[in-house]
Amino acid sequence: MQLHGHSLIAGKLAPISSKTFNAFNPADGAKLEPAFLEGTHADADHAMRHAEDAFEIYRRIGDVARAEFLDAIAEEIMALGEELLQRANLETGLPFDRLTMERGRTCGQLKAFAALIREGSWVDARIDTALPDRQPFPRPDLRRMLVPLGPVVVLGASNFPLAFSVAGGDTASALAAGCTVVVKAHPAHPGTSELTAAAIYRAIEKCKLPHGVFSLIHGTGADAALALVRHPLAKALGFTGSLRAGRALFDAAAARQEPIPVFAEMGSLNPVFLLPGALRERSEQIAAGLKNSFTMGVGQMCTKPGLVFALGGPDFDSFAQKFRTQLQSAACGTMLHRGICENFHAGIERVRSLKGVVVLGESDADADAAKTQAEPVAFVTDVENFLLHRELQEEVFGPYTLLVTARSTAELEAAARSLAGQLTGTLHGTPEDLASFRSLAEILERKAGRVVFNAFPTGVEVCPSMQHGGPYPATTDSRSTSVGTAAIQRWVRPVCLQGFPQSALPPELLDDNPRKIMRIVNGALTR
Image (cartoon, rainbow, N blue to C red):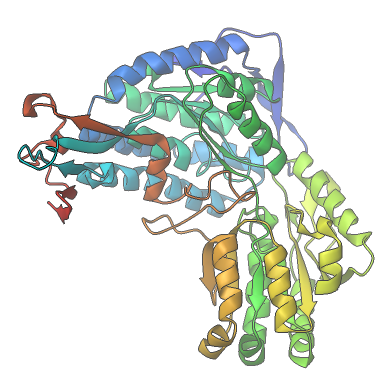
């Protein structure tokens, strides 16, 4: 497929604009063709107006038709074949096996939401039938279910060009809910974004849906994103990226005349606590697992373990030596783009300059700046020094982690309490450790959206029980998840219909329950 570099608005190419940009291959710095046209405020306005018009149709087509659409998107993405993977590799430097896995995850997400809405119980239908003879006042007939919010804005992430991008989890869950979507593509992989958008449009054509169901806008700066967030027709925002950018978007959404919900994932340190029994019994396995986890994807995972806490002493010293040995053989890797690589090295130098923080170990390999490479490195300090330097709680995106030693259980708990909100918190230990450190586990439950035992947080399963979110600043809304089928809840709101006749009710609220979904009827959960 020949790339054209235009934003795609309701199935049509956006007009030529005066500003353009190119993607670059991070592995060699080569400029990639074609040039992409910067989206304008007029493009954002047209996309949102088409999304609003299409929403009035799309929200009424029914869950089964929407499920067929999601399945069709997955089929069209797979039909792109190697071309999609090749372009994604050129734009991100990610290896083909990782991109193949990510494509499978992307299509799997779409199919998971298709299955969810085919079954139908996700609408959380609740019915309380009328009690006309109730004293002292009768009860009216009340029926409640979830309905879509309206047009949703999605901003693509840099580190997952498929699974958290144009057809990623935010888009899939919003389309499943019955919302129309306008995506602002990430400027680091615009070609990958265009190819994916074309697949979505082919699915729109196949399913005979209004073209305004989906639009894609390109852009390098904040202007296009802010124009979409501030547009009066936008009803919600999904974002994955930095705290600085996420907070700016959140503030812009809150400052609107009609504020809208923002579901922003903005980073996490994902602390790991190594309890005494674990260090004593399996320090070698933990050392290998930690090395693999914090270097996975060149450390560019939102669930990378960036902090590791343990009680100091001989067992920790033995573990640290094994971990140092593991690090020596860790490979350098190409990061997603030059800006991320520069920020990584600046973060490392910031940590290196702090008093009481020393290098524990690093890779024996040398990073090649021409290949946008980063070198895995780990530092070590103690809890007292950690609590003195708030900078140590700032995320360094890349293959970096910090080990922190404590003198007592009380110090471990103090360190845990000092942490801001996290996507994950991890405990390595024995059953006896869990009993002894129950207070620490309870602290982590308050700090993190997912608490992991005897594993590492990298690797996020897409399933109904997954929670990928956490207290601020991990996300702007700790009640939501961006992974798993519960993500659909972000794009809906409840509506109660009072006193409506059967002829005017949606199928989900009819007495005979034609879809056979689970509902709460007069207080009882039933089909």
